[in-house]
Length: 452
Image (cartoon, one colour):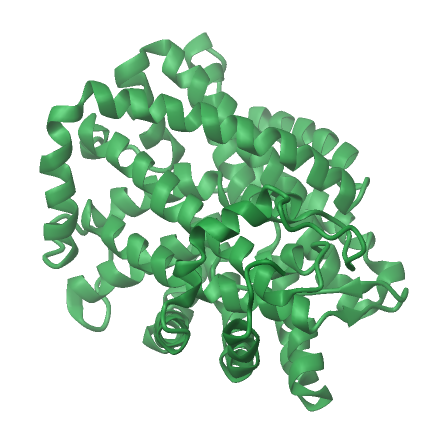
């Protein structure tokens, strides 16, 4: 059995119904016990990231806006462009409905996990305050839960590796620049791309969180704007097809007529639901535990306030950007081709903007991928810092940089199954800790006043 097949089998095993129950069932439970209160503060959350309630004396390293953009730079990107395309190429239009479910429930999950990251900030070996699942597990549940925090941190180091983003950026460069210009694509060209990405990434990630957040705060909003405007043009041009495909998304979600992957417990429909949830989790990262590490560094002493900021992430990521990508792929007919990953999205752009569309998408893919590289490196160093001390955290960057070459030179299926596997393993301790500590957040939420 090949390595690719082994990783695929492991990924299918860990993404079984027990994980689905804790991730989606747990998120739904959080939504219900909070009486949907997080959604009622949606516009208040927007005011918070605008800086209306900032307190410069609060603990933390970065602003609410920088915390959100740092977290979004790791999620808004290849999960929205290539991840959605993977979902449609395997599961058909119906997979998008289950991504939506994941995103809506994920808003509540992200609220609780990020609030806990501020509520139970820990102190690393250098005396710096830190936030994240490993800290709220230990400081919120007690030292006897340390093994679970170690479990999260170990798998977090692997889950934070940039292999999928690099893989899809390499594929985009190959399909949009190299192949059309007659350049032979193979191991040599992929290695060159990998080396260039290593150089660029090294310059930024060695500068730490503040440099990462400054770069993300400038790049991500601009490119999200470019991407959204481009997709809106595609949808406006094909507006007459929108009702048909919106209906198809809902219809196929419960019929799975276009599902082409392996069946699971519950048959083809069960497999489609799992596929949608997996791609949704990869897109918005709710319940996985990475984003709380960024939100835990925000300059605030109010956990509920940061929870409100964090819950905007899945909305922007899955409900807004993923939906637009999916509809663009569907209305242009690109989903009927044999392409997968970022190439499928490129076909949708090319059908509307001709050759220019490929370059617009490549620019977006490049910025999203690079910004994701920066953010994930920060998450990985925090995990290693927890395990081996702050003085060792920068050693992670060397592992991280080497992995860029792995992502550039291996297959899409292997990379996405690898990251899916470790995301699943990270979600287990994150959700267990969150569900146990949820009443602590509820108490603060019920006493929250907007003018605080």
